[in-house]
Image (cartoon, rainbow, N blue to C red; front, side, top):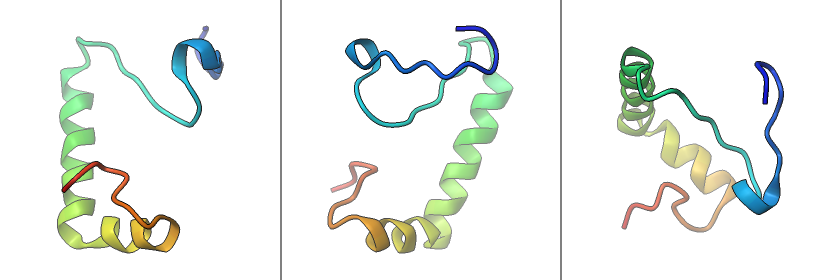
Length: 61
């Protein structure tokens, strides 16, 4: 896939939406992890998750 294309081969990726980044993009990975942690810590994640799902899509127990 070239930049901007959406990879949608369900045999390879399955159904749903995802994102990816190169292994060497460690700064971007750190920023994404920090943002996800902030959303979870603030309670926003729980609010959004409960609105749409009856289980934790993040996989927490």
